[in-house]
Length: 425
Image (cartoon, rainbow, N blue to C red; front, side):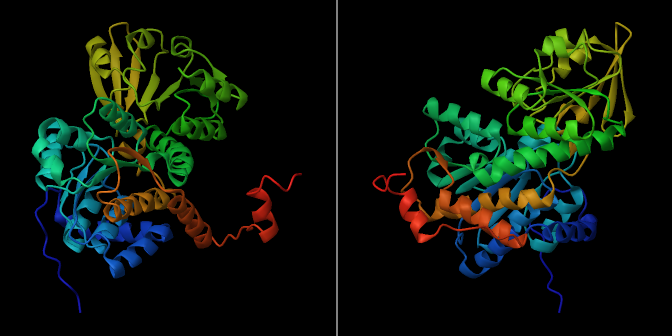
C-alpha cells in the first residue's frame, strides 16, 4: 500500500519534479551508509522528539538525507537554501512531496527571496539552527532578540560560519552554545579537502569544458579547501600557483611543491583563478587590470564576495552569457574576463557539490551534533564547542566498516605503555 504524504507549506520550483528528485536522493543514499545507520537509530529512539529545527544548507541530494535523519529523530524540521545557485529543484520537490518536510529553496532565487526564506526559518521559532555561513544565526541575533530564549544551540559546518560565530562570541552577542562541526576531523579532513577539491574542478569543467592540463591555475587560499583544490588541479596537469596571507600555510604550499606568490604577481600569469579564502575581494580591480585576455575567475569559498564583481562590472562595456554558468565581461581596455557561476560556489552552481561519500561523514556530524545539543541542554556554556572526540572517532569507525576496511587495535601491553610515564623506553 502506498502512503500519501500531505505536502506542508513550501516554496519550491515545481512539485512535479519530485519523481526525479526521489530517484536522485535514493542514488546518493547508496554512498551514505553512516548517515543511513543514524537515520535507522533515530527512527527507533526519537532523540529529537519535539525539537524544532531550522536548517540553512545547500539543498542537494546529500542534504536530503540529513533532513530525513532529523525527521526520523522526531524533529519538526524545516529547510531553506544557504546559496541561491546550489539548490537542486527536484530534490527540494521530493523532500516536500515524499517526506513532508517544509522546504523553501529555489535554484537562482534572488537576494530578496533568500532573505525572505531566512525570515521563514526564524518564523519556525527553532530550538536548534543548522547553519551554513551563520546567516540565520546572525539575523536572529540582530533582529529577533525575543526568540533567543527558544534556542538550545546551533551547529555550523563552514569555515566562514565559524569565523562569524567567533566574532559574535567575542562581541558578547552569542548567548547560546554552537557546535563547531567544521573542525571535526571527519569533516574538514575529508569534506574540505577531498570534497571541495573534486567538486570544484568538476564545476569548472562542466561550465567551460576546458582542458586544465598545461594551464596556469591560481588557487587563492591554502586552507583545507585550498589544499584539496590545488592537489586536484595538479592531478589534472595544471601548473598550480598558490596565494596566501598566512606564512605557515605559504611554507606548507611551497613544501607541497606549489609556487607561492602574491596575487599581484599571479594575476599576470594565471589562466584560471579559484578563490577559496572565505574573505572579501581577494581578486580586485588592480588584479583584473593585469590579467590575460580571456582569463577565467571563479569562487569556491562560501559567499560571492571573494571576487569584486561590482568593480569588474563597472569596467565592462558588455556582459554576455557564453555558456551555462559562464559570463564574459568585455572591458573598456578591449580584453575580456570570464566569470564562472556568477562568482558563487562553482562546485554547486555548475555541478552537484561534494560527492555523497564524503558528505556522509559531514552530515553524520550535523545529525549527531543536534542530538548532543538536546542531550546536554542547559549544561553547555555559550560559545563554540568541539564535536566530542568519541563521536568523531565513531563516525570514522562506521565509515571504515562500511568500506570493508579493518584496522589494528592496541594490545593490553601497548595500552599500559602509551598511558604510563614509569615504564621507560
